[in-house]
Length: 422
Image 1: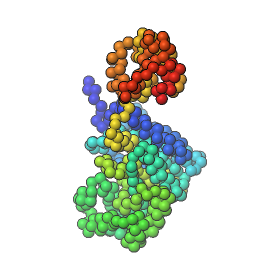
Image 2: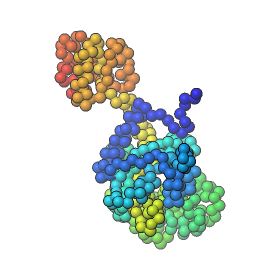
Image 3: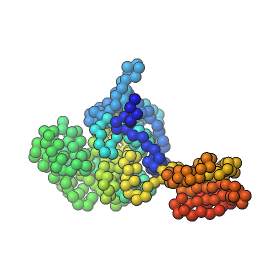
Image 4: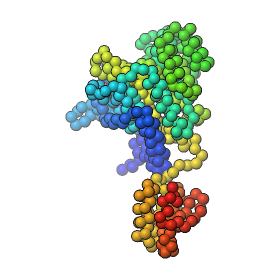
């Protein structure tokens, strides 16, 4: 029997798992600071829900994991957390609006494998449903900037609007039936560059003159204000550009930039779209992204009524990888703060452990009496403190505390042991 992981999946343990928990705790803290409550939805959804024409679009369906239950019902693993949210809202119409929720969980996409890309990965989302106010769009960007500031990562948020993109494509001469596929290609500009995208568009049968015009529009440069001004002159579209100006102003940060070429690949976006990137990093993919999707929920209900919604999704895997790249020192490999080593004094060692735990100090115990091996264990897992409990220490009503980083040792009274390792 082969015991390797399924392709595109991985086990996460030790240092990596601890780092991810730190990121998750930061995300939850910021989400709740902004008034969002947790929501959990199943990993399994009805395939018809995920494949609805109002969901992610045809491109994402190529990557859906599909299965049938014993009743021959067609099911699928969720590919994001947004469509399940829309399904939840549509099936719980008595919810008071606005409804603000956050969710953290595994999503699955059967896409091509490459470095840093997995078929099971974790998304961390915050969404507000029932608010059409652009202050909610700006709040998503504020949340992102707050999260990355707490994590010590230097980022820039790039913002666009689907209304502006639609107008640009129309002005360039893109046929209505080609809009979706052209959007998907534009979405690859940041990752693969202009030349690769031009080649892909040509391969899709887009006219060369249309591609040329499109690239000119998408290459507009200047300050945020200058870009908006140039586009108003070029395409005459004002609603989306005015919305961008309002979101930029409400976000209140210099680290927010209007990017004309930002598309976002999913079909359900209707207004503001944004992505967050690391500054000066070898990681070029976005670390967070989202946008406004006002039509999806109402369309699930076959109603003309809109359920305005906007959300943001953080990529836990890429954020954790980014922190590891930015940090010169390796992170903790264990949650244990102190290892208590008993040298023939199990009863007193147990009392010391109990005292530490009562003072919220994560600790573990070694009862083997093999001091050298225990110290090697502590060093291997980067446990910062080792506490020795032997006959000599017990007679003095003290313990010996060793700082595993500096090597310093000191005798500490049993009553002060918790304070000495905090």
